[in-house]
Length: 362
Ligand code: UT7
Image 1 (cartoon, rainbow, N blue to C red):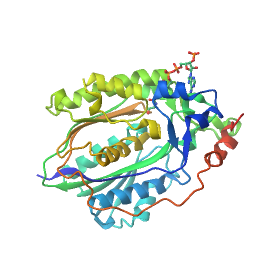
Image 2: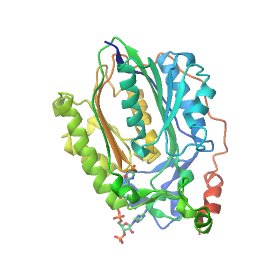
Image 3: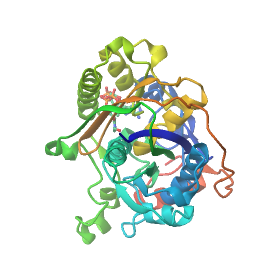
Image 4: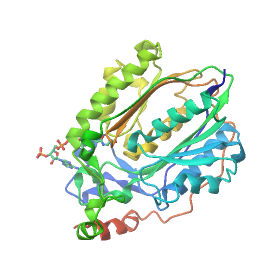
């Protein structure tokens, strides 16, 4: 029987850094509070669009899999911040990659989007519908951040990560999964003026309708419950004992949510991958970036039993019990890079300040 496996991985982080100290000049906050309450020290601000970040991550993942773009059957981009609504970010990426034999689709389940896409692509490969998918999580989330709102300004960042999901004869792959949604509480994390449902006159009067708005403590409570429950359920459904789990790669939204999920799985901290201190919450991109860094740090052993878990706007959640393949080394490297930038973070954010308000010292 055909079996889907992750055979390539890659990430793309824009180089410009926004530190906690930088944020002290924008909102009433401080490094101690942000570090203690979230685990975040810095995040990246992109000088290019979501599709450009996705393209570089995608090229790196294809090189790691040793595949030419023409072998890809499906380009799937998980994002809630596409460059535009039409066409999809995936279509732009498909063209930029030269993936001339691929279909292309965006998937939006907010921060859970990459896991949704991974689970759906794995199912398509397992079912024989396609042989090879390039699954990317890519976000330019800071476009939707009002830097006068300290409840969101400190949390989010930009970036992309990608995996290649391929048909193989090797054992492993997706052993169990869960997808969930509770749309009844959608308004505790949303950007109500970011699509076509907003009256343009209202948006003109208050640009902040376009920005991400969040009831942090409510989201926090639900994240802890959904991540904990769904993770333990997929472990059980996969037929694993809790002690069989080698690595938890969770969505990176808040280190306290990650710790609570790990406690629910009774996991030693050495079995939990955390990189939130460097990038903050990059929504659909956190898990593929974290998986790539876990592989680079040799924390994914051949045949490793991995739990992925995510939670985000929707409210959506997803979890997967995933057995990694025997190859944990990349087959090749790509020389793809983003165009250069001068790294002036306040200059990059000037557009946000002009639109939503705020700015250094305001
Ligand atoms: O991908 C999924 C999407 N998002 C999430 O998962 C986020 C989930 N929520 C969270 O991570 C947390 O709720 C936050 C980090 C957003 C907030 O942390 P919290 O511990 O829930 O803080 P809080 O909102 O209950 O606020 C506690 C205090 C308040 O002050 P008082 O009323 O106790 O005097 C806030 O006004 O901290 C204050 N506060 C801040 N202080 C400094 C809130 N935000 C900040 C800030 N800097 N940025």
